[in-house]
Image (cartoon, rainbow, N blue to C red; front, side, top):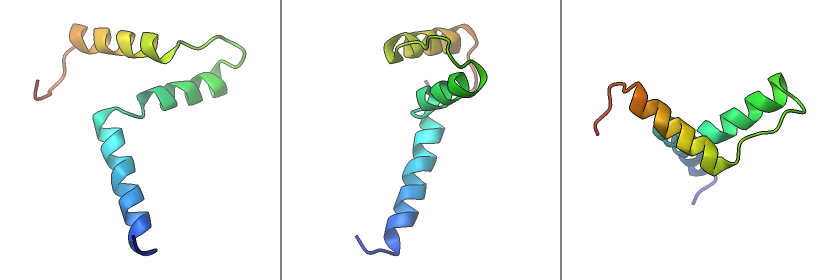
Length: 64
């Protein structure tokens, strides 16, 4: 990969992860670290389970 192409690919991958919700756990960890230091954080599996339950309880426009 050329040096000029690498930043564009990185930005595209970041965008896709944001749109698909892949970064949600990282955002949660950052929020907990900044706003609730010292409090325990959910393991990723529990976070994802609660996230899916929330999406099922309050569906938004999505394809599936």
